Image 1: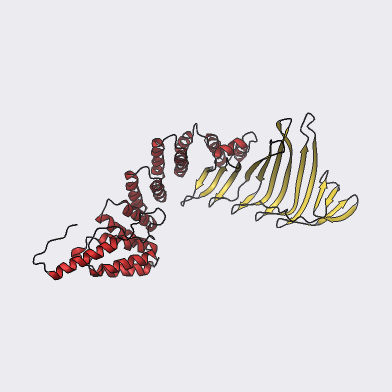
Image 2: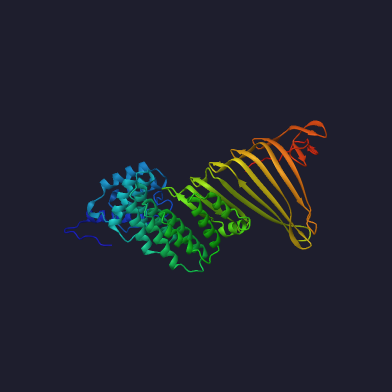
Length: 464
């Protein structure tokens, strides 16, 4: 630490220097808190400075305490008072003041002034990454997207393996609507990643595809799709892109045929993986918007969903058709596996992410027969949905198969009447007699019931 020599220094001035040194020790001894990607401005830790402060330096400690407690307006006032009191000759430590002031402004939502304070701190010490991060965050919040891109690009150049900084840079590029640069950013990152680092590679691939779609450049989208070659998601991405091209060309029937091909759908959702695959338009804020489709899968419980049609705020909205599948394996007495599969076809619109109209659900059942897993039956349920729950009549077609050489099937039908998803009693004719029932079974929906259940079902809610 260097102190400017003064002529004629006396005991009084020496006492002042010692006092400043003591206060400096107090301030810098507070915990140094490194910058965070999520809350850079609400962290009240005092950065280490090694600076000298005047006797009013205790006010700086008080200001940081207010900042730590989230009292941002009071902290701004305290920092301002300290700025007026400090001795300009010993102002080498004003970086702590600017950082604290910037955090207080940021916490109070005054991003323009936060940007100015962090910029001043950066001018004092341009090597500190935490200050650049704070500055980039303030610039983004203040709407200075080019400045934010510049700040986060500088950080990324210093550490290209920092995924958090990469994400911030991508966010800044998106807000700046520089989608081509965003594409190039992830293409370059993808080329440098180790093939064995699957999670990181998958992240780069997903962001590359997203950036390509944001550019609306069909050539870049095709290039991004090609990057998925020989990866687990190759089938989902290529199939999704093929269906999407048909969808936006106006050939919706062909697009549906590609996505809902019964010979392809299970492999499609499995290859999509837990993170899913989306093709479609984006809003300025990065949310799914307009015509598109999304495919989700999971290797753990094998939950899979395909939404197809119009999107709004990342949710299906006005989709022409949707598909949702679920398979659950369980052991039977012989240690073999039985499988239940549920397929939901949504044949009408969506409102805020839930179906609104006709919903067709198909539950398929498979079981082992002589050591071979075979189809044993399914239930096809058709209902009118409103606000995510069934309303009115609910019909189920029950197909029961007898595994084996004969492969005989029995077909029957079940009727329910529901209000807000809950079954209610309805009038049924059975063997010429009229009764009230909660459930009725038919050989044919137009015939008389051959069996009814007159007991209220407590756990039979019909909802999506």
